Length: 480
Image (cartoon, rainbow, N blue to C red; front, side, top):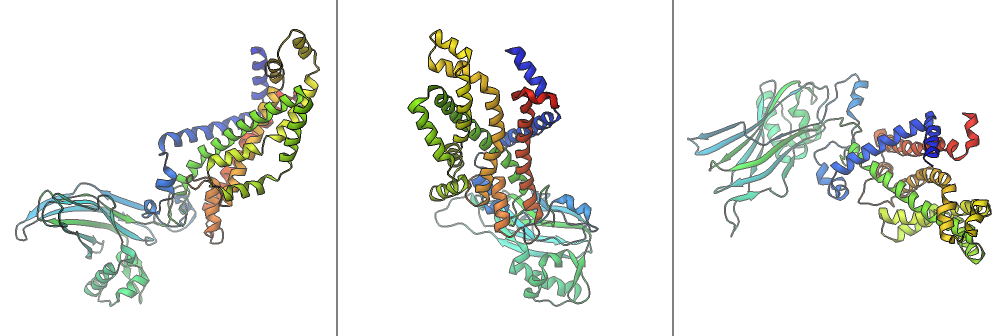
């Protein structure tokens, strides 16, 4: 038996298609294990389907590597987070403690940011509520205080120390805030003698005012150089503090695969799809193969009424169109990954049962089986200890070959909006892309990668099945 297995492995490994299939499968497994051990179990609900988690990410931008195919230096997405103040001092004349959180960066891009945002988390104070200022200094020496946050004071019955924005951070979308537009209007009048109303500034874009220099008319060109962002905490107690401050300069490209219309990092969602695809493919085909093989062996060997009942049930289920019935059942039930697996197994076993039965009808009259019957072996022992090993290579090859079918079926259901909403899958990402018009507006990075991953995963198991053909059917070896 060991010699037979070694010979089968030698034949399988001698094929270049087998080696390619094993390599691709190893990549799929490694990526899946990485996701399983690094992603939280509630990733879909807590992060992927939570718009607030992606609020600081650019919306619908291509991958960063696409900038190498353009002549312009496209703005990259940058998030600056500061936890410790760079300066702490007491201003005696004002009787205030000043803590300054400074962010310095060199802006050398040819495009303006897509938006700007400012976030404050966990403001803690003991007596009077502090005031937080946001100031920006430009490379041309112009500076402006563009936002002021007055932290809410103590409420009746509340005891010190008082905490604000500890559960939900305070976030300001600077590119659309009216007070920011008013401050920028004053800055333009003071430093450039340009009169623009806050409404005009919001139309132009506050990020263009902050990162640009006035040109002809109301146009602005990018002002390159070193920018400094200062977040100043002014309080009456030295122990007052801020958990962190964050300043976002949103880019026009992001990550390896870009983002969707909600700002979600598509690379993160695509990675999560690896273990989901393998789970659906392996679990579904394993259960389908186990049910179909068992029913086929019992039907072919026992015969009689048992054979008739199994075959008639198999004929009925096998002639039901799979995709329409799956759509109907999942539509009326609550979509979940386990429901999809159950339905794929329930409607996927008859085909294998019919094939296995025809093989068993030949094997049950073999000399080995007759000898076992003469020795008094039970039917169950004969079926699963002597007949099953003879068809095991074929069964294993069929299981591998059927895996892409399960993966494609789940992708089709998710593409139609009937997938498990708690788990991001490649089919769901495609569905979001088509539903939100990603195809029509040219968001190719939203459509092509999940489609390629579905095809690549399916081809992986096709290669493995093709490599197993010479093992299952030795007559094919002479053609190698």
